[in-house]
Length: 571
Image 1 (tube, one colour):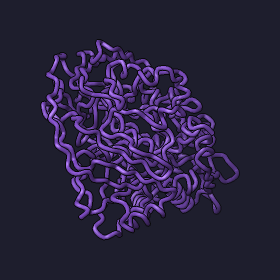
Image 2: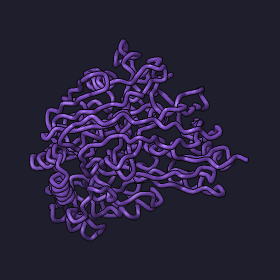
Image 3: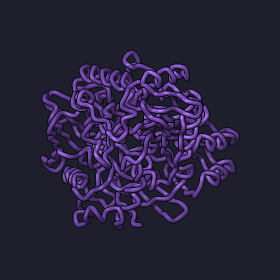
Image 4: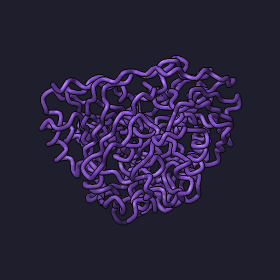
């Protein structure tokens, strides 16, 4: 199986191209080029991190493993980068502005950015990358969010985006890492994943690959290349600003001069290596493995709020009329003890979910959410209200003569141990209510096939959402077709209008009003059965200092402040 094929079926986790960050400006003015301040590096030190897995395609558009995405985060830059608390800061861009109608975004780029081979990073590279994402033959997860958006180079260092409709979260899309046109212009998008470039990438980020084999990849810090600085003129994902530009100083260079990512085939060997003192950090493990690794003397666990949502999806297509009634969906949700599942399946490392938006999000409105409480008595009453009849051995649908059996789809324990454990517990709680439940588990490829084809009654899904509250891919009627991202198949005109309002509203206050209305509608109508959001857990030895957690949409977001990390002396 080619890397590109693996990339398609590796979607056990449904990766949604959900973007956000409403910032806009009334005018566009040229800001001064940042004055580089070069910092004399400290003596070279090597930071050692254990990762479970191996690289497959080190390319922003075709990354298929977590190791791929981790390396992309260290080797490439976007126009903007993540700042603290959901903010967005300049990276390849040094200023930007948005037209009053929200349809035109103009970015003025830095002129000092270089690819590893010395060639300048230009607006043409940005246009080239966006064009690849829009190519009809591109089958990666990023293409959907760029359709209909026109990217134009207005000179060598100015790029302009023209949108067909306003997008409240468009700025967050510009975190997209950029690819070099001069090296890839002759590579077909269908060959990109398996190209030589994706094995030995040429990046423009703060690190370069020094050596790589089957056991590790060693990255070295690019000397004397200033990063875009934090500025008070930047705006966060939930705010707006009159513009933003890089200041005159560079981000102080930390003493993580070398990063050695060491590959492991399984969690047990990675944990053993960390406990033996061979690694500085370890992450991306199951809660039980994190707990085991943290027993090392001096180790601590950093928790990154992650937009990873575990949810039960009910098939609401016409072929499943049993889930068409609100009282049925509400009863099935009331029968699930989400707080207990969070403690058992995730060891409490996350938060209970009530809507597809985490409670820690600045956009979350608790006053708008109608939370269904855990209550078996309410659950039974809801099913009775829907006309279901409970017998000695199960529940019968209205006018039925035999028990109804729910087929609950789940990845198997190897493919996704947390989702599997959640499915086991949901099945047990539904059985405790008297329902007949058949738990059907599959490997990653077969699970994805059954999920995308709609061949299930209910399914446990691990959604990887973005930091923006636009969740239209989950529930929009147009996404309910076979292989669409609306897995429940729900079609609802009123819901579509609410989803579209969140997606297309740029004004901060108006968008929050739209978000609140959407939260109320989703929770009141129980359109999905959200279980919990998982945090990303990062076990850190006492050798590593100054690591700050942040809200992230992917585990690779843990590197948002890697230039500020410090290593204690090995002596």
